[in-house]
Image 1 (cartoon, one colour):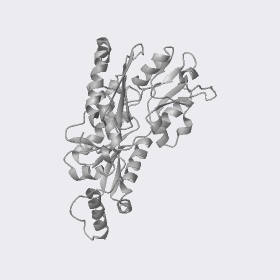
Image 2: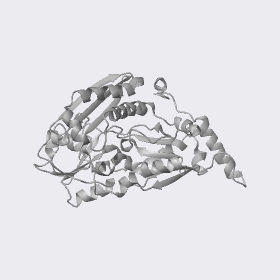
Image 3: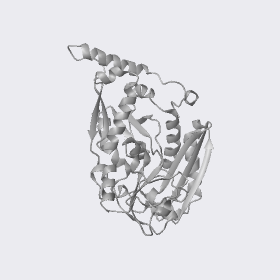
Image 4: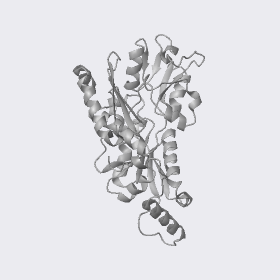
Length: 357
């Protein structure tokens, strides 16, 4: 794991040389009658146009400029909103139109072409194999990775130990995630599921209008949007295993742009890098896609990385979890090893069903 500096996880983060150079360039630009030479400013930051994506992008820029306020004051960065096919098509499952890469395809095309300099993503929506010439240069500190249940009827009594009991018999769940669907059906096979896609507010509006009895969202997104009060149930990881990368923001850049990669090292969160490396290695080894009910969740406790992986059938009749732990520097190996174990203990027909068109 290149660049992982776990022995210094508690050390203060200092501005990198690259960050200092960008700040100096911004100052020179503000005093120059002619455009300065060197890297062209402002640096362009690409993002999806959804409210949550924009909040995450602005949080990233706040984090980046915290060490050099002149970067903010001099306008060294420019937000660049990009419409993606994953956002435009709200009537089909992602698996039917190309998978989670559709949330990044147009953004990464702009990055490869040089129209933007950074791209900010929800890591759970980022494909495991990036386009040639691009790298995941930075992972930010993880928000809460858990899933949240939002009910239309908020008068229902909820038992935290038995959270699924709050749903009435045959309740209709608005959901686009086969991972969530499989885990819910494993516990409550009576539940029904209907496709519900769109940004957070759109889903909540549809729920309120009666499109379904409940829906599920990532708690991290609700917190970032200041909407945590809308949550009725928070599932613990043993009740619903999160998606790989959930709650983590990742930043991609061109592999050849060494200066920006150095700049981003100033705000890299080593723990987020370790856990996401394990989770994404597991997902990659299992060939995870949006049609695959796979979960992966890692955390670091007392210096040890603990990874839980899950694979299930879409109807929830089969569900398997396995665990592994080891040194954080072994994150990639652990993810691959756990995936191999899950594959070995999963009936072959489960994978055949996943690959079926």
